[in-house]
Length: 205
Image (cartoon, rainbow, N blue to C red):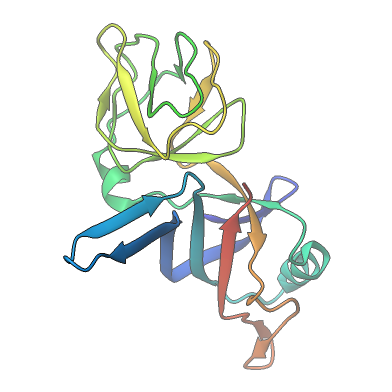
């Protein structure tokens, strides 16, 4: 279940509407001939706008979490996977690891061969075991052939050594901050239901 975790326990579930966006700064300008000049920065982070399922008897956990974390302390969420990608994923009975190191700024990694891996569809969020950045696959992966490549977005922010594990199911953990527009407190509706409305989370990069 996607939501906010504290100490390994789900304390708040995400609810629709939910949006996941890529913030990748781009600067563009038009010349007098109407040609467009575009400069794209290397920085990138994921941002999530979502509602939180209203809480009653467990509302104190989220209340304390929002106040104590504030806007400066990162915390863990389970990253919402694209529904289409989740449905296209075939049964995966094996772990997925890299073979050979992948350099900084590379847009792919090489996987160890395992015919039991199944299909990892494009649009799947993944995380490498050696750092916290979240990536997205940009092509389908069927890891049954030698040296299968997994193409990713954005490019690698950290070198990935050989033998690094990859999480890609509904267990991809993202480190986030509460955005400055998110309420740092509690709001009640109907007397007993704590409903903080729409919140915004930004990836800790």
